[in-house]
Length: 352
Image (cartoon, rainbow, N blue to C red):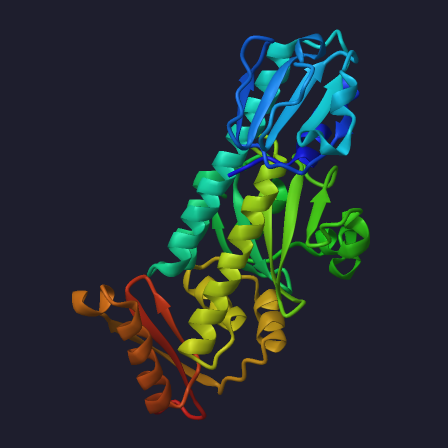
């Protein structure tokens, strides 16, 4: 965990910082300094007044953040061997230290959160558990929709009663047409207005700001992860966590689909939404069936297989059994749902 000088300077903009010399050393800890005491610990940021700088720069990969402009000439030379940033002489060194500490704490939080997501990614988990962890880390509701803006999953979504769009999506199973007209997905690149084209800020459309992250596979969007700034503002470090969460979700979708079944994860999420009774609008159902190319005969039976504890404890066994059922029934419309394998079996006549 370390902090870059670029990020530090950006956060200190209101102090009008000036980079005197940049040796590009990472910052991992912070200390006050005075004329009598100078630490040379690697990765340290020393904060104090410019007038207290020693005449000869200390040796080591260290950085200085000083208030004032009375800087010895020896620090202006490339061979000085340290990074130095100066701010206004009226700046309070304690306030500077608090700012840096907050940045370092955010870096620690981000690193720990991403590590949690990586551990979950490698373990046997479900998409819902992954989103629940994201909600726990970010502290704001999450909504996952597919490329057609059809509901896949959510976490903490029962709380945003002030957001009609979220309530609609969670109850109907898809995003309203009015929203689609306001925010057209192929225009998102232009709306992002920054280097992170995978992120889109939606402000003024909802009662709270919303961050949308494009989950892509080989450059092609497969889903959108939405974070609603309901409980607290979305910080810069949150963006890194959302990106890691989105990549974990992509890994989950691809792994659970490509490894175990030829069916589409979007089609599966649609079928699960039906089982959850999250999607009941007839026209929307017909639209998703057409979009996902789900072709069913006129007569439909639902086959439910209850799994034993032995299977419930081993996700690999579940998907092996799922493949066996797919081969036996010659159908891809089989999903794992709440401890059961549910097969939607269609026939041309009413006799199975």
